[in-house]
Image 1 (spheres, rainbow, N blue to C red):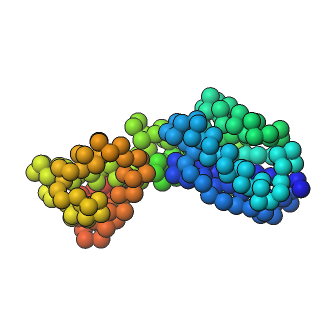
Image 2: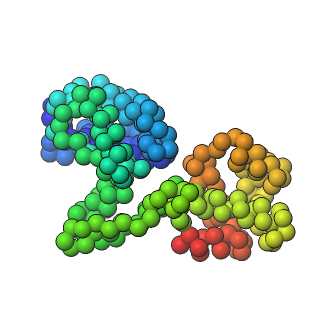
Image 3: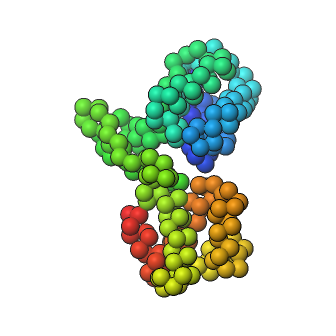
Length: 233
């Protein structure tokens, strides 16, 4: 059976699709994160290896029948990362055309169908991508949570925590988000956030998950929450 494999690899989860040569969906599944710059090469290799083997076992497909394989992955914007990910698929036996690109590019093509336009992604991280009528692609942002990702879930979650601590210091009015976040994390006071953030080694995903409390804060007209959302927008 000839087939095409497409993979969307993110910092939170990875999705794999198999279609036949006509584009009819044959198989799909989700797995763990596959950002090579965050989880590391060995972890990405394990996630992709397990997902691909499950797909092949459940469909009866073999690597030699793959017509084309494309993966758009968070953190795969540079040549070095692309070659590392491509090597993973080669070790699994794929000899077809293998295309590795970043996750924003596949979203741009998926959303616009190859036409000109602009797309903004704001999930755990953030990036903006545009394509003109000549097919040239322009990028802004997407530089990771330390030097970029403005307006992302992580950025919002981090700013919520900053606002809580400033309110605790008295540098800002107490935010309505403070009791919401403390209850969610089963903490008694803002000082305990120090251990939660620094000593437990929490992930970007966990901080990004706190972004929902900015929405909840806006519903009660909390000034700190509205400021965070306005800045993010």
